[in-house]
Length: 176
Image 1 (cartoon, rainbow, N blue to C red):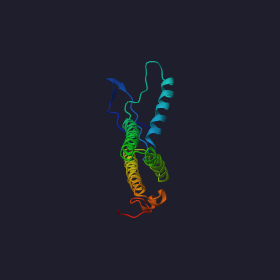
Image 2 (image 1 turned 120 degrees about the vertical axis):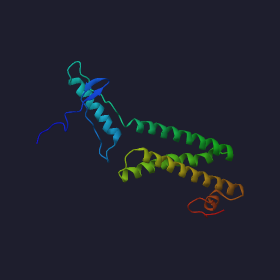
Image 3 (image 1 turned 90 degrees about the vertical axis):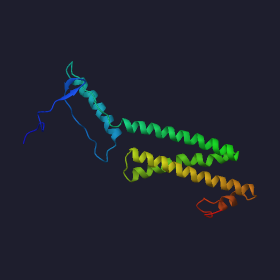
Image 4 (image 1 turned 30 degrees about the vertical axis):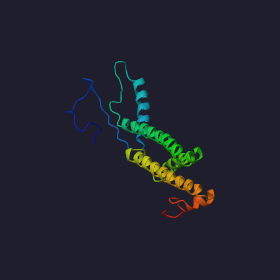
């Protein structure tokens, strides 16, 4: 048994010049963003030790889509927060009523990240989609509860009674 390439008939080129290729595939349970960060740090160390005229580069980074997806998720969450505040304030006329769904967003994010960690999930497109959907569901339910509490309070109920009567709340009736 010897250490070497499987096939010596292949040639790798990078920007038209002969190159050496080394593929790095993260394990399924590894965080791809951490892996590429460590690869880039190691590549910088390798570059320092190479003779002049040789360069070490990362030719392809498959985590770019994850970085873009994370930016899009943060943008979506920011837009969600703004839209929720504006819509609830416009329809209910109360900044205090806007606070419940606004508080529901970070609470649902913390819960989603906690569950991801507890079950060993990593950040990928599927988990990012799940986070956005879960935040949307929680915010939607919070809006329904706030609207119903406001309606019951306008009908003369105390805030506590309105909270117990509000459909959509986990302790209230299931239909109006």
